[in-house]
Amino acid sequence: MSADLTPAIALVALAAVLVAVGIHLMLERSLTRIVIGLVIASNGVNVLFLVAGGRAGSPPLNDGVAVADMADPLPQAMVLTAIVITLGMTAFLLAMAYRSWQLNGHDEVQDDLEDRRVVRRAARDLVSRRVRDDSGATLAEDARVTRDETATDLGVES
Image (cartoon, rainbow, N blue to C red):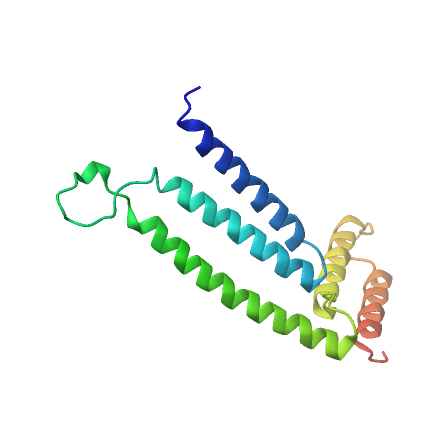
């Protein structure tokens, strides 16, 4: 293996590790871990942009330097833009985490009642498709139980 490729391979491996760790943290339920995961993953993507930009070169100015020796300014501009976007997202998520801490005393993301209803409805439909009597009609008992569970989840008496 050539000595020129070793730093590039090390940086690609670093980018892969940073993105993997960032995604792992973003899958957690705590907003603080989500923020840290976002920052780590974006740093990994920024490193990957710089590696993909090629080797370092002369400034992209027209002062007699050959075009092949000039650095490509596009990856650097994209990294600067990504840094600004990451800063904005980090500030927004930190504000959400702080507000969640103020209101609830923790920063964990809660399940949505509507999501639970959709999952239960899908499970009920699956069961009613599988369990049919001889005439082809679905079991009314299953539908009634699911309706009562949905009403309980929403805090409504049936």
